[in-house]
Length: 281
Image (cartoon, rainbow, N blue to C red; front, side, top):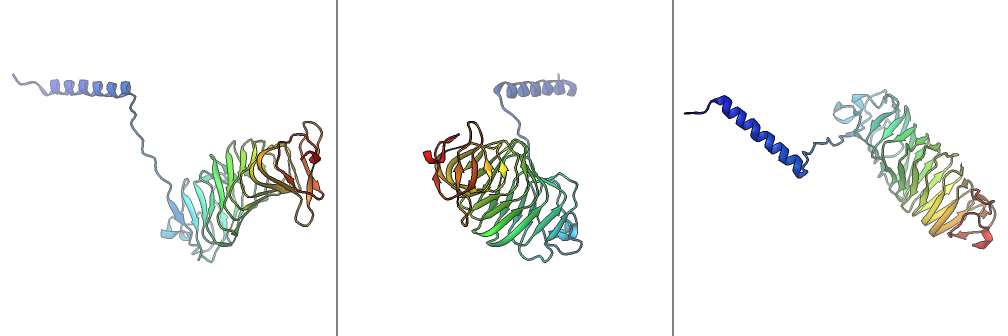
């Protein structure tokens, strides 16, 4: 006697449940599709030069949260007003052109900042917040990246990389950490309040502000400047306080106090230091 359709349906349902149970027992997981960020290219074709204006982007399509933004050589309008709501998250900012100035409202970044222009400079004159560990890269020797606004590390690691120059002029805050990598020069000018470790792995880090709450670890490269940092320890690298015009030295602090960089003559090799006299090195 033929089986009813309801009987076949019940049997299929039982088999499906058995297969699902087997997947769970075996530890297999069903993968979820993650959408990749879309690259949006600035054309600056029409005033006003607002970041959210579709007519200023290739294809007349404005970026949405999570996209990668590219600012190429060629467009004439390069002073750009960010009129997205404060804190809007984009994946990354990318510059292949120079003489851009991004201003007004704050942004949150997930994938960092990348510059590939061989010469010239770019200005980012807005507050930035990190949404994950990332790198700000000034790639070429002849290029300069100016970060004029404050940077909130948001408990993340920020790596400065590349062979170019980077100037961080705003306050860097929160409990995240900072790494100087690449052969270029990073200059920190503000009185930064971040409390994580500052690692100098390569290139030159100039500290010209006060950031006593951040200890410095030297694993390569050079630490210099006219400011104040926390305790310094190291396995490689060099300490060259002051400037080329006014060389400095490492002042011997009181026990458990931060090391101070003051004007004087001298150049000190990196060594394990907490409250040791500069003469000991």
